[in-house]
Length: 282
Image (cartoon, rainbow, N blue to C red; front, side, top):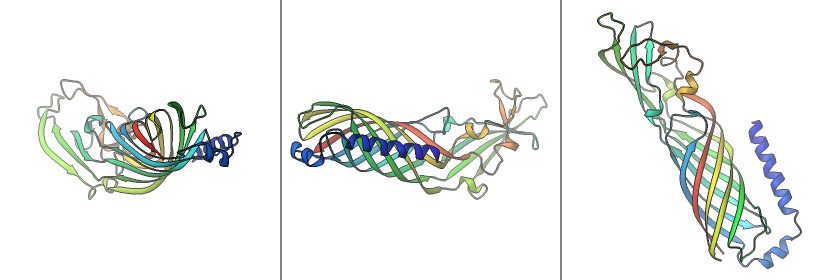
């Protein structure tokens, strides 16, 4: 919560500083021929931090409306979406159970995360602009309320045991599948959350009615549920036996794989997005 309060404090500070410049609202309305902007953007998104989640490159899109308050500040509502598909290659697969004397190779499906956000976008031009400005650099602060979904997770484990007593667990003994019926934490989840987008961008206006822009945005969402095996396992002991020719390490499955909450964590989620967009000025 402290991070969110800090972001909201930054919003109010930026707004008050931009509104305090010499040009008043009435003057600006007279000066700008086109003080309204309708925009949309899309691009790739990336989780931020070492294995924050077991996700590959995601996608983002945003649309919104901006109203100029003066030559520095514009504001208005925005609707945005960030989506990440679960990537099985990000999940460490090797586990060992001392109780059953089996090794397990884990694979999973599901667990995709989607964040739909309704926010208040505050855009601050670093240099005052006018109708004739062709190139500008700006920052954005966008606190939001979000609806977050995570799809159901299904786990499949291949079982191996040491048939010969040689220390190599290379005998395949079938597979097992675990669903939300076995571990309720794997069930689909949806919840209302909140957070903020912070970003910087450059804008090029080839004509008064049209602009194109590129923007990098950092997004932070208050705690949600998502797959993050490395985060879940970071405090677990590793069983280090040479069960295969690659000498892989095996996590103690009795204290990880078979825990009720594995591999779901409930933490803040952060991402960096690259946005390419177009704006219509009227």
